[in-house]
Length: 237
Ligand SMILES: [Zn+2]
Ligand SMILES: [Zn+2]
Image (cartoon, rainbow, N blue to C red; front, top):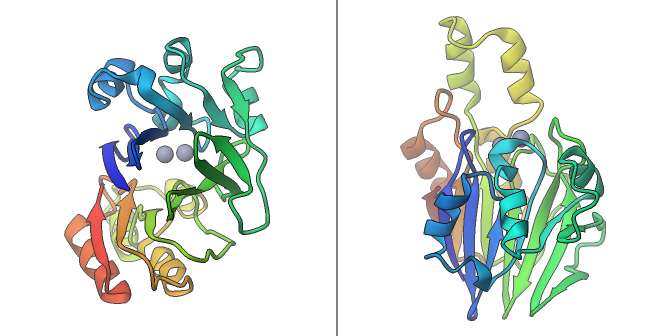
């Protein structure tokens, strides 16, 4: 499984997943031409796009992607929030509570959507299985209430560190209401560590840290601290 971030963060999110000869897109929060470029101008070869929630940094190109013939999967409330009820390529995923990728997209991709905790209509994370690999994708969620077995790849939000956010509040760079919003909608370094500590990582090959804040994060430090906690290869998107 090859994970290629085309963009990550509050100005855009889009990840290309190549596995056993097929390609899936996670999020489409970029301008369509940038997505075309990231897919080597072979958008028609995409099996599907999965969208976690309606915020523009995750969904910007959804209509153009569907017009190009790509099925886009999302929760029902995300579909409504984006006004896509009449689009036949907007496909609904229902969050599953069992920890098994029960909902098959076809084409050999197993996808199990699960609830995340974010200030959006019905945000989802995804457990994605193909050809013996199992990827956990979870972003824009201040907490993940599930634990997962048999993961080989992890893509997890690591938006901010509590101390960096607090320092920016003290410096007047971030006001208290924004601090509260961030803490109630995005994952901290501390929560990401706890999440990784409490999952079985024995088969994990690599961990990607996603959606780092411009002001309240430190890529080198986050990578180092997550490496220390997990002993795994850590990459920052
Ligand atoms: Zn976002
Ligand atoms: Zn969001």
